[in-house]
Amino acid sequence: FVDVFCDQKTPQQHLNIKEKLWESQDEHHLREPASDKRFPCNVCGQYFTLKSAIKMHMRVHTGEKPFGCDVCGKSFTQKASLEIHARIHTGEKPFGCDVCGKRFYHKTHLNSHSKVHTEKPFGCDVCGKSFNCKSNLKSHSRIHTGEKPFSCDVCEQGFTRKMSLKEHVSVHTGEKPYGCHVCGKRFKYKLNLKMHVRTHTGEKPYNCDVCRKCFMNKISLKTHMSVHTGEKPFCCDVCSERFTRKTYLKTHMNVHTEEKPFHCNICRKDFKRKEHLKTHTRVHTREKPFGCDICGQSFAQKTTLEGHMRVHTGEKPLRCHICGKHFSHRSNLSRHMNVHTGEKPFSCNICGQRFKQKINVQGHMRIHNSHA
Image 1 (cartoon, one colour):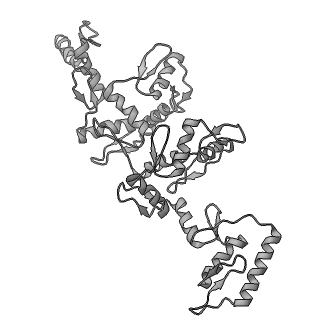
Image 2 (spheres, rainbow, N blue to C red):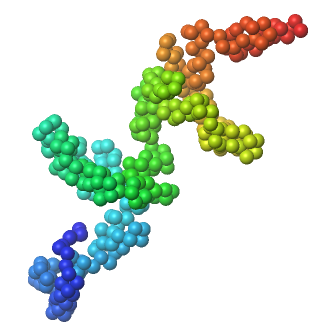
Image 3 (cartoon, rainbow, N blue to C red):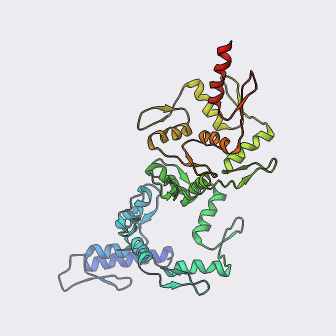
């Protein structure tokens, strides 16, 4: 059975309906009928063959919803409807697509999804794009018409979809309706929850076509691609230096301001970023929270662990854009670039001779030490 919605009734109408219900029950005693008898609804005249069926049906008229959700308090007329609703909180998705593996809370959602693989009968007259259901076509059409029928009562911003408005309202209310069933963390937007859940499941659906490295979201993959392409889209307005990531640019801007607002309580050293202070503190605590699953070696920084893992995997994600040679660490790539540029950044502090690599300076110093 599914929930059936009826027109709103006044309190007096509800009383009249309930009186009719009890009159009907007195008249028929709600006994299990013989094969040639059925239970009629005294309100709308609909017939039922089972006592339990008419009992559930009467809730349509009385508005009774005896099955309440312990998590959010929402009520339902039927136990089956409550059980389906509970999957929103538990994350259970028992219905899986045989084609792509995507899972759903409800069988009707799976049935609608299946059309993605089989048919898209609803076509847009403007651009020709096809959709598997009429409601999706209707929402899409607003891109062409500019129609935004759903507006915010607070700021009057318009939206093409009701769901977009619902998520926007949380900006004003501070509400975070989407909760993680694993850790309880809450989010304003369903998309943010979806990405967060991957931190628990380990799912990384976005793959790099070059090195096959996987990522949890499309933005991380896009940022990673700059490692292979050499693209640096983020530019400093002060010195024009370019960066592969926005966070790198943000950190770089402190070079121009020299502001260091974060202080170590132990040695009083100052830092430009809170993350740098947090990492620095491990020098004092000797904490090494990032452990290698293969050899057990621990590290104070996550980036150090990631670099270490390449020892085991043999991965070399950093590519020289001149000769195409690959490297496992950025420092190795930087040293290699001196081969092409001819730069010799390391110098002997005794005779001034310059070298491309630091290790060459160390070897050179033995000449001076032998003459000492």
